Image (cartoon, rainbow, N blue to C red; front, top):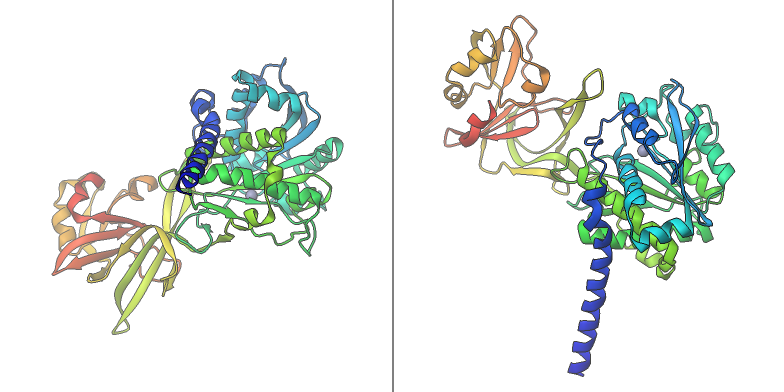
Length: 477
Ligand SMILES: [Zn+2]
């Protein structure tokens, strides 16, 4: 009996090690295939155009499938000789670029890798890619296209050239498999837990009744293989997108038109603002899926495996301040404060800084933050304006800021303000002399400046959604 148990344990270990080794197959070589020309999310159409034009024509068949409303080329890229057709399209929402980066990593893998796995993929499948379906949106780093149409609500009416291109390619190829590649809101959680949904999947429904036909079932099974691989990298951080049928969306319709369709939504993870780790997980997921399509091992999964993946929840904030006692209307009010930060980008949509706002207030005990701060026992003070004026930030820096902050001053008058992205990271607030000044408050939509005190000693300052410990304030200017 004991022997049998040891045997089954070691068998389990062996299987486990084997599957680990399998997962690492794509991971081990990733660093050599990562496309170095794409290094952050705000790359442009011109950047990928260069890379596409450099693809070797003996392997890749590249054609211009059409043009966006502003005349940018939308490409169809083909590789492989197999009977199973797979179509992948990315970035139909211009500000959802993670998978596009992964596709270029994949192009390098397919070009350079000499493994039998790579050969088997290309012998059993023909892969078709439309990277960056919405180049106008990508260049402006916005969701919608230049007509301000959401392409993913245009699958039936087909008013955008980008939508027509996707529909035409789908109809012409009639692929067996389709991958609809997106990014999702960073506040999406995996279930109603503190775990962010770093990657979410969906086998979209093809009707209101959310029925399971053969194609949707296969898509669901293939998702299970990717989920299993991802759980080794981001345990608990895989979610399932809502399967509510959306009659205008491409994923739902492409499923209906007979292609086994999989939605991949890349979310966020701590300390990966430019989503470079999640880009790698996209790459590993897609290769895992290709390998599984070739080996047909996805067929071993059941609906119950899929249903184990928790539905997406939305219980996250960038910063959650718990148990803050704030004095308002002559009363002490116990607040949890949920703060989020929006990306404010420059005109060229190449760079950004973050601007905070209060997204929620009140009892948020069942919510979570990427960063959390327990304000129990702190006395909280609102922002306080210092009445002396400074020429610029340098002049302010030469004064005793630390001393002023520890007297409770948080806000300073400046003649010429530094750039917004510099101001966004300072542990105090700057106001331009002679502009209208309104002190911030703890209200929905506001960007509060608060200081946290213990025994009349300043401990922590909140400015623009960032917390600054008084002990290492110097680091921040
Ligand atoms: Zn999207």
